[in-house]
Amino acid sequence: MHIEPGLVNGAKMALGAVTAAGAATAALKASWDDLNARGLLSLLARSAMATAATLVMFEVLPHHPVGISEVHLILGSSLFLILGLAPAAIGLATGLLLQGLLFAPFDLPQYGMNVTTLLAPLFGLAWLARRIVAPGTAYVDLSYAQVLKMSFAYQGGVVAWVAFWAFWGQGAAMLPGALAFGAAYLIVVLIEPVVDLALLWGARRLRGLEGSALVADRLHRAA
Image (tube, rainbow, N blue to C red; front, side, top):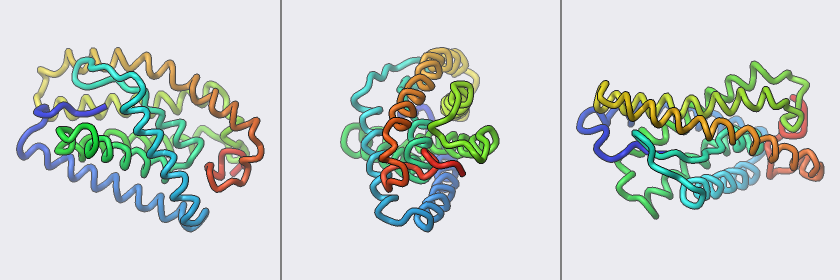
C-alpha cells in the first residue's frame, strides 16, 4: 500500500504532513494510555512484534499494483485485536518507515500520506470496536460478524484514503484507477476476517497468554 510517487505533487503534499501530525497525536495519546496501563516493556515488546509483522506484510507477502496503488494484505484489525491499539499504530508507522528507509526510498516523500492511510482507519476501527463489542466480551470470543465488520471498517478506510489522495493529487481522472483498486481490495476484505478468526482461535487455545505482556489485555479478558 503506497501512494505512487508523482500522484500528489508540490504544495498539495503539505496536506499529508498535516494529516500525519493528527494521526501521530492520536498515536501518542494511545501510547501514553497503554504505557500507564501496561508498562514500558510491554508496550515496546508488542510494538516490536507489530513492526516486524508490518514489514512481513509489506515486503514478504504478495503485493500487486492495481489501479492507483498496490494491493496488500494489511492485517490492521489483527494487530489491533491481538496487540492493542497503541502497538498496532506504532508498528504500522515504524514498519512503513523502515520499508521506505531500507527497501523503497522513493516512497519516503509520500510517508505522511501513507502513514495517514494506515493509521486513520485504525483509530476508526478502535472507535467501532467500542460500539459493537460488549463490555463483557474478550476479543477471543468475537463472532465472525463482528470480526467482518471490523475488518471491513479498516480495509474500507484504507481504500477511502488511497482514493482521497489520488483525487486530491490528480482529480477526477483517477476515478477508473480508484474503482479498480477498490474492486481488487474486496479480495482482501474477504480474506482478512478469516485470518483474524484463525489467529483469535489460536489465541483462545493459548490461555497461557492471558495476562501476558506480549498481547493486548483485552484479548482474553473482558473489559
